Image (cartoon, rainbow, N blue to C red):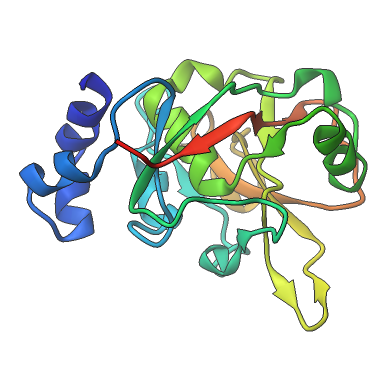
Length: 199
């Protein structure tokens, strides 16, 4: 499986603490993008592997709690180190919608929003998915804050190299966040029609 070998070459077996052979055994075959579960390798550790223009990806400074963003209760993620997702869509038609507005819309279409691990895995498999002014949110991951959800929603876009990002990061893939009630013209809402872990 070419996608598995690509992840092996990137050093994911070492990151997961398993042999390359064991890593290959854990990867289900079949169609769709291979997703590395957050419980297997934290998304913050995968972010630097998102190369764009020769620059490594990064997590914004005010998202040090990225690992606390877990799948929504309505998002059924397989309990497996790796699994596959199919029917992917970047959600361009939902640009300029807010996360709060887009979630029920995706569900009404029979789609499920991507988690941040799924979004990162998609870019590892196909970096060209992320384009200037055509980036996406991963609202399938949210952080619980008491009885409510944290107002931040994870997103993936290309840094402009401004502010705390630093000029040296201009053009790099950025793992950031947006407010759940805000709209952005350059951010769609990535989603899938299916997840499976069976070999």
